[in-house]
Amino acid sequence: MSIDKKLSRLERELDALRKKIKGVEDLKVASEVFDRATLLTLYELTNKGYFDVMQGVIKTGKESNVFLARDREGNPLAIKIHRVATSDFKAMTKYIEGDPRFPRMRRNRRGIVYTWVRKEFKNLERAHLAGVRVPKPIAFRNNVLVMEFIGEDGVAAPMLKSVTLSRPEDFFRDLLANVKKLYCRANLVHADLSEYNILVKDGLPVIIDLSSGVVKEHPHAQEFFARDVANLVRYFRRYFSVDYDEVYNYITSCGDDYGVSEDSQG
Ligand SMILES: Nc1ncnc2c1ncn2[C@@H]1O[C@H](COP(=O)(O)OP(=O)(O)OP(=O)(O)O)[C@@H](O)[C@H]1O
Ligand SMILES: [Mg+2]
Image 1 (cartoon, helix red, strand yellow):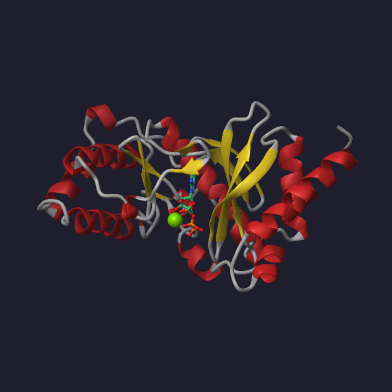
Image 2 (cartoon, helix red, strand yellow):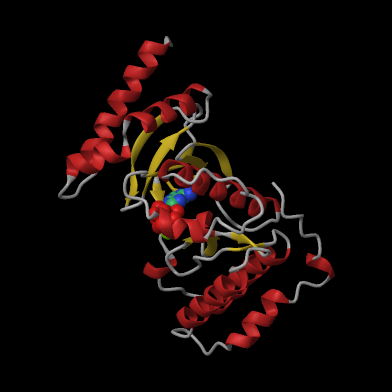
């Protein structure tokens, strides 16, 4: 397909998606999500073959939007697009500064958002390598992240928050084992772990939204980690009694099986 044809097809797809993004400020939202720079970024990603078509909206939010897309073989993908205009870049800075992987961030709005997306990709990569159940990262560029779609038949898996677990003990055990791998093997603290950022697929937890995640060396890592643990403990108390210290100690007792943590680069 010629470049012109590709571009106009992408524009048609995005036009259709714009119409699907509902909300009062319809037009404002759409022009913020698909501003010119983002359009070009999407064009570059599709040109490189990372995705073929964009199909639908999975979730629209204030700071980011997630779309369903397909690769050339028709396999589903999730594309997360960060809005530069409405990002809380001051809050983001707290989760970037001090992480030795990002020593020289450009401190303007765009630079911070781009670093945020790169960080999520890097975190997903580390987590995936460590065997944590997360969406497999595929590509990123600027404010756009392409990853494995978690769901079935084009329908995204529900958040833990909106599910009643039939086997909560098993689910919790599996979740903690995943958080432990994240902590001990990937050397990462999620930093935004809650029932909102855990999806339930085939009865198992999938941890998402790793953009806040920091390496353990980050000056606030322990504070973030304690909050993550507290969130999990609070949520699962609806099902059974959970002891904070027990959970904390389980995750942080890394031992030999988990001692293969990488260095903090990359
Ligand atoms: N890989 C994926 N597959 C299917 N659905 C996804 C995927 N990633 C995200 N989603 C859906 O999109 C929603 C928002 O994603 P996510 O939590 O990553 O963004 P966010 O909360 O806007 O993040 P942030 O606040 O860091 O911008 C999720 O709750 C989930 O429903
Ligand atoms: Mg989220």
